[in-house]
Image (cartoon, rainbow, N blue to C red; front, side, top):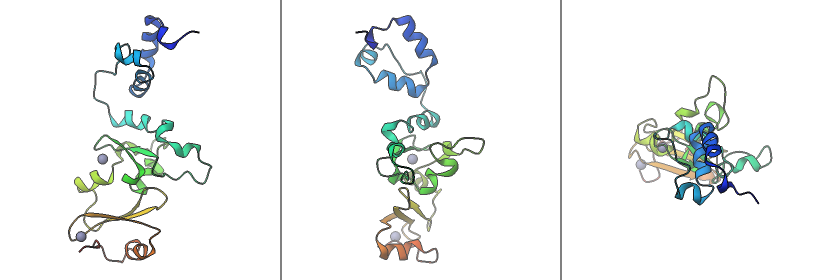
Length: 180
Ligand SMILES: [Zn+2]
Ligand SMILES: [Zn+2]
């Protein structure tokens, strides 16, 4: 039976010329002979957020695709790319707003802004989320987060926890964490 590793080099070269960074990575990791013998290498450049935005749609990082319609909110096994740390992290690391609409995985058209998406840690590090900021995160309002206006630390709670939902979910409620 014909085997992928037996593919003639000229044909492999022709295929590689058509592939994106993400697809080259996928092909390289498909078969040990491709990376051990350097038959498939990554482009000679640093990867970008655009490469990660392609990778985050792979089924491994996007199990929501296989869930029934209506239950496709991101869950802990769905992964998203951050444009600031250039990492792919699970949905617990992103505000709900960073994972939907124009920042959603499959957003397309002129108004797309997913290439500017950032994770909660980067948002706090780079002062995009200032003291007192509150938001839902993790997808489907699973968690509520707060950047404490006093100690500037991030505190997150499960929204199921009603006590916190009242305290943190209310715009007029305190913007202090539970320790301050
Ligand atoms: Zn980040
Ligand atoms: Zn605090």
